[in-house]
Image (cartoon, rainbow, N blue to C red; front, side):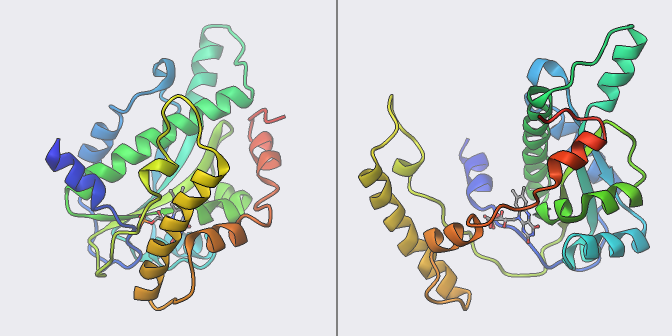
Length: 243
Ligand SMILES: Cc1cc2nc3c(=O)[nH]c(=O)nc-3n(C[C@H](O)[C@H](O)[C@H](O)COP(=O)(O)O)c2cc1C
């Protein structure tokens, strides 16, 4: 367990990569391991699309909001919720596919557990990773570029490669803001724990050349405006039923 905890606690997102590709055998091995994640009723509601064409990587980098790592990383993947396989087997069994918010959520949870296993497998091979939620900024264009069929819902991208940057582990909330016994904490306890985290986060930001920032300020600012309001409409247009 100690070795695994060491791996987990040394995680940090990597955003700069030299161009060395990630060997296909390593990708296959990591994906096979990631597939062993728990999955609701074994539905395995995810698909991973590796984008290998340089021109498509370059276009995706733009579509993700100008994130150069999408183009530069050794490998780039698009993680999708996959209800297409379910639609195919349902049709073959002459049954309807009952899509609703729950089935989409099941897919997002399944895909996220798979993705975290995948990240760990790559990190265990001394590679760095960067999840790319920016993929959701231009989903219709991503969908068109990758010619995704109905029932395939991209949720985020993943860059993988040898780390080209020294990078520090980003602090996390203290245990008493996350782990509760029997009942959730009261607001004062929670805010005190957040103050502790703000102090650590402020030191982390200062080390990275952004003094005066802390966690609660950054999070409050980024959550003050609703993001990507057109996602449900897009996913619905591809066969989801998010009402
Ligand atoms: C679903 C998801 C989407 C993310 N999207 C982006 C992104 O678009 N660009 C980026 O640079 N980092 C992205 N990140 C990385 C987070 O910013 C990073 O995980 C967080 O700041 C914590 O830092 P750490 O991973 O180094 O511990 C994303 C992370 C997750 C889990």
